[in-house]
Length: 519
Image (cartoon, rainbow, N blue to C red):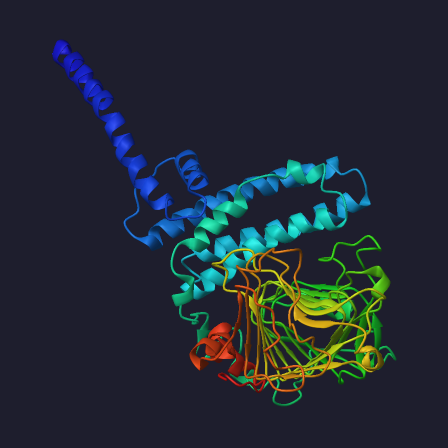
């Protein structure tokens, strides 16, 4: 009996040893065939075979995409743990500032990757593509902070990892151009956080949960105090903060969901700050107001950065808030005024003032019926209205300016003939910006668009103009870049409408902000 058991054992071991290489080869071949579909196949194959303890070959693209995201999430968690430890290595305030941004950005990336694979959230392919696009933008922003502060030589190399490549691989799985702009995060056409009583929130003046007034007539004298109260509320239902007229010198970082800042009008309620890159902040952290909590709404408020042109990058508002709305607001600054950092955003009947790259970032954003004013820049500078930051061809991001007006601010009118103003320049390789059915005044240079550096991105960008009017609208003298086009097809132009670019018909009706869904 013992002899038979021993013989059986050795027979099993022999079979295992014989077949194991064959099974391994089959597994590797299967993983190879999937990884070859990604932009970084070697990174894909290495992480899948080293990070997954039990790995089976996926049958469908959706299964492989989920697996790829899970691997990216695992690596992001590992990277964040390492990044926290690097804080002690920072040699000065500038490195510390960039490192602190990275901790926040990695934290948000981990949250977004979790959302895409959490079965309880039931995200659509469109949601997934948006969140993966944001996750990749976050990591690009992390690196940029060290570079712009001139401290990229020490801590940044120690942060080196392959998380960005893994997210790019995940983005590449599935044809992003054919992903329908729909979401399951809503019920009966309204976001799940909007109760029936709140559905006319912007149609009339809503009841405030708290009132902020500098003269003492409200509950609090600062917006920060009101936000601290909102943080203590149970659940995440809409919280309305009425900010009465006044100039509020505050820097705000709003991470809470479903906050509504209601001002007394953009001429009367003003939030102002003066952080800048020259002053030691990263562009990301220079914002007077930064918003990342989803479902954010602002109405009737001016967001201002008074650092001035000499201090270069100085953001008035940064939004990375998914499904955020800015209605009847104003954004005032010089370089980098409005940082549409990431996620899905809508600006309606707003005013934007600036000089260099003053509408920038990598959100999927539509500005509709807005007034865009170029100001007088520093001597030797050119004005560039947009600098879109798409780094990956599969990101569903870009800037769409629809039915708006591009004009000279009062301080610039007398200098229009001596200073060139352009519609935009390519901040990143796959920069994407369109101006549609808008009025372009005399300040717009006949070339229309400006290079970033030599031939960088001129073939890979997507810059389009569709049925614009005004003295700056003729396209005969426009640049001849491979990525520039005069859009003549309404079907091509419609890709950048509120309905198709940011799925506005799914979520904007809940806010009762007026919008045009199509062209």
